[in-house]
Structures are given as C-alpha cells and as structure tokens.
Length: 321
Image (cartoon, rainbow, N blue to C red; front, side, top):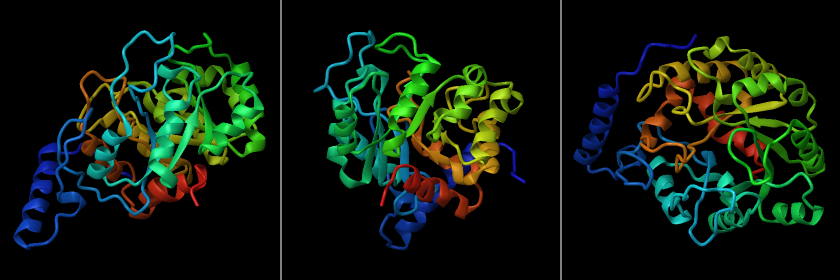
C-alpha cells in the first residue's frame, strides 16, 4: 500500500542541505546529491535527493537547436535548448541514457533529433515523427540514426493537419517489422474514443505524460482503466512525465497526479518509464527538475521498482544493449 500523505517540501530541502553539509564536513567528494548545477529551462540548482542508478534513462526530452529551422506550420518561436544545455541537466539529475523525441515544432523533419542522438552517442535513442506515406528508405535512415519508434500526436498542431486513428494504425503496421513501438500523445478522452484501435495495434504503444489523465477525475476516468489493462497485458507502457500538465494541486507535491502515477506503477511496474520532458515546452514558468525527479520516491517507494523504471524497462523498450 502506497503512502498518499503529501510531501513536506521544507523537509525535502532541509534534507538536501544536510547532505551537502555532511559531505563537506567529512571531506568527502560531493556526490550527486550534494552537487549544485544551474540548468537552462529549469528552476533551482540543487541535485535531487534521489541518487540515480547507473544507466538511468530520461525517456522523454526534446532538443531545440537554432541550426535547424522550425516547420512552417509552427507559429511559436521554439526555445533554445541544444545538446550542450541538456548535458547540464544530466549532470544535475544524474541520468546518463537519453531518449530524444522529435517535437511538433519540426514537423516531420527529424534532422535535429538525429543530430542530437549522434552527439549523445551510444547512450541515446530517438523517437521520430513522420507522415503515413513515409518511404521505406527514410525509415531505414532513421533506424540507422538510432531511432527506435515513432510518435503520433493527437493533441498539438501537426504539419499534416489532423491526426487520424487510421494514420496511427498505418504507421504501426509500417514499423512493426522493424521492431519499433508507437508513442502516442492523446488526451484521456481520445484514449477512450480510440480504444479499439489502440487495442489492435501490432506494436507496443507508449502513452506520453501519464496518459494525460485529467483532474479531478483521476483514477475514475475511463482512460485509466483502458491504459492499465493494456499495461497488464504487456502491450503498453506509460511515461511518468509531465506531472505539471494535468495537476490541480500543483508543485511541489503534485498530489493529485501522484495518485495516478502510483496507480500506474502498481498496475504494472515492468511497463512504466520515467521522462523529464526537458526543456518543458508547455510551461512558461519552468519547474524544478530535482523536485520532479524526487517524486519517483513517492511514486515507486521500492528501490528495486525504481531501478526497473529507470534502467531495466528503458533498456528493453529502447533497445539499449
């Protein structure tokens, strides 16, 4: 049974200061929990209290590099968030593996993502965005560049216009022989509407951002049951990311969203992964990434389960050797 009582934020920060002071007094090198690192697009400088295990993976982030032009369909100026800035995030949080997701900003142009995967090396994988009629030679180019899945977005504006369930099914059929998965961004009502399509996809399906379960409905929303059933069957994963997107209670506890996250972990701990959503493109007021990472201690109190979420599940899903 999970403890659902709210976190006392003051105690979290006090504990961090104690760790820093203790390490300093003992003359020990400042470990992950004691480091300070300012990161673009993130509040705070202190490292999380939770120490990331070796090979911990951030399974959802974006790179926005000014060298690559946005798609004409995207009207908002993108943030400046190149690989060098993301490396500062890794230094602060302690993750070492990364999944770079092409944002809607670039339409179906995946050059920025492929360039980021190349820069980050063997510790990175990519999730691309393509049209339904993408050529086989392009899929091979993406695979050779480290891509292991496609994202299909039903929420944000897309360069092709409206995303349809037929497009989702077509793309799943196209990439199934490659051993890829399909990542979907749907709101909870769309998950319920498209339940039949999601249940017959030949590939694993990965739901972005806690399946966008709204509050205050939370666990009572029909979408939670749909997603949890697919997880228990081993046919779906959920990204524990974007806690700020659907919360009504807010930071630092994100108490309402935390109830949903804990329930997904409890439903199928082998079918959840964690993502930062750096550089938090939906947020004008950027969150504290250390606080977000520390939520994992509440969402998965058992250290072995946290290792599954941060290391074992991503290794399997994203084909890290």
